[in-house]
Amino acid sequence: MNSEPLRGVIFDLDNTLFDFISMKEKAVEAAAWAMVDAGLPLEVDEVRRRIFGVYRIEGIEFQSVFDTMLREVMGRVEPKILAAGIVAYRRAREAMLVPYPHTRSTLVALVRRGIKLAVVSDAPALQAWLRLCYLQIDNLFDAIVTFDDTGEAKPSPKPFQLALKQLKLRPAQTLMLGDWVERDLLGAKNLGMRTVHARYGSEVPDGEPEPLADDVIDDIGELVEIVDRWA
Amino acid sequence: MNSEPLRGVIFDLDNTLFDFISMKEKAVEAAAWAMVDAGLPLEVDEVRRRIFGVYRIEGIEFQSVFDTMLREVMGRVEPKILAAGIVAYRRAREAMLVPYPHTRSTLVALVRRGIKLAVVSDAPALQAWLRLCYLQIDNLFDAIVTFDDTGEAKPSPKPFQLALKQLKLRPAQTLMLGDWVERDLLGAKNLGMRTVHARYGSEVPDGEPEPLADDVIDDIGELVEIVDRWA
Image (cartoon, rainbow over all chains, first blue to last red; front, side):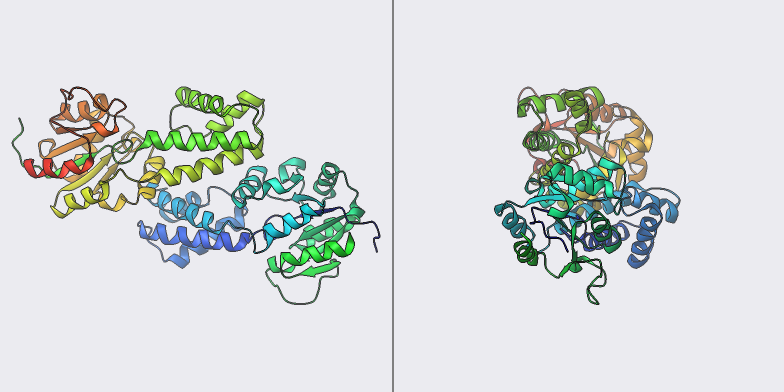
């Protein structure tokens, strides 16, 4: 196992620094209620099902999801219904766009220790930055690498390598924290980084520790102790 | 002068039901501060000036105003700066998207009297509906006509005629309230509607009463008395 002192931590964004799935679900539910209230002739559950159906086809970052759903259901996009959905979605999203408990205090504790921090996200640049701005944690990172910066998603080594270059650190000096084993942990492991599984962000939070993870945490606050152990 | 009893009121939206200019100014100022904070190498006043410069060329409903300004200033769009501007703009816009004082109580008072209500706006359909949803007054209207419904802007008779058709009223039975004399009041007058000038929404709120206006108000609450006089 690695013996270089730890100098940097790289974080995944969605479901590692904030609860992306929960945000999406709550925002879509609010939008579904509002669109039914505005005259969409469907049950709320059916609207929600159709919206996530569009996301499954077009990808979770697809921005015209309500237009697409309305066109499928009504054959046209009624601005009254679309606007009701957008306003409800935005309000719920903003309310839900808060970091996981202990995220800010953990990031600040690491900064105080002189640990360099980065984000490596597969989200498109604008979406990733919007989330970081809403979360009000963007200033705490020394490097933020989004999908658009390399054009490759994890577990490709490229986004990790770009973050390491910006941090001026070697893989063996860094730790990757992420919820997605096959992307976050595998990509980092392949480069020789230490890996911590953010089990709190995974859909199945219980179960066996991941073989790819050097450590597993159920609260981001546990990261400080791990960093201290490896620093 | 008209002698048919008043049965309906048609409202302009921007600067008649809410303070659109003030909303834009506050939201743009918040965005300018945030983009400078995020690294845009200009004074805040200069950023604001450039944003309104883009609006003057592209129109006040232009949605890519920050991208355009950033490309002019930096030769590229840095997602970090764009995201900071968008988040600050959205937050300030939402905070400012409230109806003028006495708007909701006035609309409800008119509905209670059996007066039919409409909106005729030159804004694009989605933008108009988003504003009405944020303002939470959309349910109080019997008809909402936006630019996209007729493809013509006031003072064209078309949007007024569509609203009248949806209200099932004749021009002589209705009153138009708006801040923009050459569009709202002229268009309504040409059709034989009564006209009231929303002087509180005009850039130069003092001065002589408009010759095109049958009445002038400095608070939307004054509308109830005028309607009672003509009902």
